[in-house]
Image (cartoon, rainbow, N blue to C red; front, side):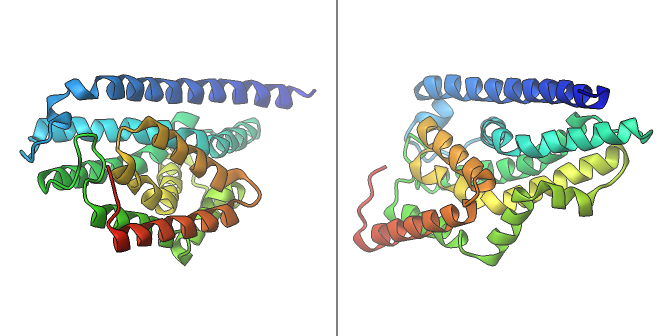
Amino acid sequence: MSILEATLRKDRLIVVAGLLTLAALAWLYLAQAAATMPAHAGMSMPSTRPWDVGETVGLALMWIVMMIAMMVPSVAPVILLFAGVSRRRRVQGVLATPVSVFTLGYLLAWTGYAVLAAVTQSALHSAALLSPAMASGNPMLAGAILMLAGLYQWLPVKGACLSHCRSPLGFFSTEWREGVSGALRMGFRHGSYCVGCCWALMALLFVAGVMNLVWVAAIAGFVLAEKVVPNGRLLGRITGAALAGCGLWVLVTGAWVS
């Protein structure tokens, strides 16, 4: 084994350990939040009292942590590829940027989505469209979200964003930028593609329950599979058809229990 190969292996182990720690801490936070949710007055009481700024900020932080827990596993291959490319460039005498900068840029894109999701949830709460479990309490809302998520799986914009997520090497070959600001922009840009790919799937949490950890894990697992398995595109379209069909059934029958 060459020195470069040994160094790359060491770098990968360090990056993997860091990502596993980050994801584990995020999941631990979510588990604790889910366990204590009934005691959280601002989020558990069946009241339409608008949440104040502090409660909304707390909700946004919860969504940010949730996005970290859900998306870190699926972006890990991209981060590892970035680490490998950076290490090779460092060996060639090019100043490399820490992996953490690229990762931060990626998470900033999802932070924007998390803030928007929190504001949306606050509005749905004020309109009495969410149950105390933070799930849809309205069949029309549940059916519409299911149909939206399902149909989006078939749209060209979904396919284009998924292509970038499934082909990180192609992304780096065309989007590479030098320096700290370049790595931050690359991370943010790749994160934006991921948001474009997965935002509708994340909206399904408004149907199943924002703190339903079974659904959180299921969606995270599906996102990972869609990005890395050989037939990920086909899997996404089949799932999209199923979601749209389920949404249509809910809209027609009104059969929905949150």
